[in-house]
Amino acid sequence: MKSQSNFSLNWSGNTKATPRIIYPKNLEELKKIMSEKNFIIAGNQRSFGDNSINTNLIVSMKNFKQILNFDKSKGIIEAQGGVLLKDVLGLIVEAGWFVPVTPGSKYVSIGGMVANNVHGKNISNNQIKHHILELKILNENNEIVTCTPTQKKNYFESTIGGFGLTGCILSAKFRLKKINSIFMNQEILEFTSYNSFFSLLAKSNLYEYNVNWIESFGNGSIKGLCYFGKHENNNNSDPLQKFNFKEKEIDFFNYFILKIFTQNYYLIKLTKFIFRKFKKIFYKKVSGFDEFFYPQDYFINWNKIYGKKGFFQAQFLVKENNFKDIMNKIAKFFKDEKIFSTFIIIKKFDEKGKYLNFYGQGFSISMDIPINSNFEKTKNFLNSIFQEYDIKVNFSKDSIANKDVIKNKEEYSEFVKELNLISPERKFNSIFSKRLEM
Ligand SMILES: Cc1cc2nc3c(=O)[nH]c(=O)nc-3n(C[C@H](O)[C@H](O)[C@H](O)COP(=O)(O)OP(=O)(O)OC[C@H]3O[C@@H](n4cnc5c(N)ncnc54)[C@H](O)[C@@H]3O)c2cc1C
Image 1 (cartoon, rainbow, N blue to C red):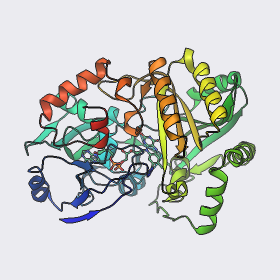
Image 2: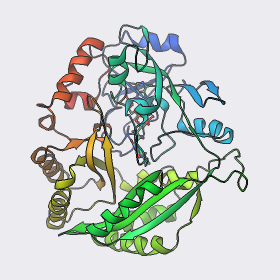
Image 3: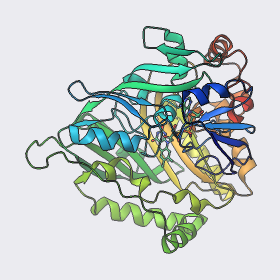
Image 4: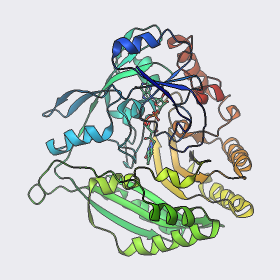
């Protein structure tokens, strides 16, 4: 069982700690860890928030990387918690299958995808929970529990999007999506007002995937690009094949350019404006799935451009009738305080859910914000907006929400009630769970 300490433990580099990190090699070693009282399980530590960080001990699942079963005819796969999504894709794509929901990075583990109930660009059923058939979980009593949507239902539902607090996900079985090609048809369309944005969204019924990138917003205006896509369906022109992913580290030149242009209030505006104009015209109508789903994996360590302090991502769901109001308020705050977001994504959202899942109807807004001297002010401002508008926060990415945001909500008390039954000793806990007093 290798052990080491580290200090930047999540993707956004915004939470520092010096816990021990251990890498159990097998179930026996994993079971020994249950004698500890205070730890969290980690997958590939690609979370934006602090839910895979415990200040005492992190138990990495990196050695649990076996694909246990792949039924090529039914499209069902079972994989250990530490298997990376890129390795699942490496196996299933050439056999004509794809993951039914994928986050924007393929360097995430299956356990992490389940525990954070990841979502992607799907227009409907956009959370991994819709496709999970079975979980095997090692609980804090050192018992292996098998649960499904009908068997030990509450355990199943509270583990998906349960932030690793209900036990260690040893393996997950889930349903795949049939594809006929490794290519995607895509369309990228520009909007320059709320009206044009809303009318472009009506195109969603022609596609399977949609995501919307925002260049600028405020004072009743919004500009950006709508991305639409669907899997190419031509059986003959592009046979399925083994896909080799390129892993490229950021080089000094790109690091320098990205750091300068994305970390400055004025230069980021210019960069975004040029990107919108360029992308509106020059985009590929047919692209590989890697380029379509995982553009952020182009440099596998782009998070480094945010430096030692890192950044944070806030993702929250606003009701349709509050959408413009909230966007205007955020824009005003940003302008007054010279705060900026490097990357803003908006998505129409309609999900049912339970416990602390990210669910509801409206628009999901996600913003990457570099951490600087304005951090506390920004954090307080966003928390006040969350409370004022009764906003749902995506806790799987969160590192800033106050307990006040959820303390009176039924979904919070129901989740804590479930944890009291499943993990009464709270051996599995994190900076996140302590912050929100779970
Ligand atoms: C470039 C990029 C793009 C992204 N895009 C999206 C996106 O579009 N949608 C989205 O939803 N997310 C997105 N994410 C976030 C990422 O998909 C999730 O945070 C994912 O959970 C990370 O997986 P991981 O293996 O790194 O998990 P970690 O960060 O290691 O852990 C995440 C959580 O899962 C728990 N966990 C991990 N493994 C296990 C296990 N075996 N048993 C029990 N608990 C476990 C941890 O305790 C923690 O609470 C993105 C991340 C990056 C870096």
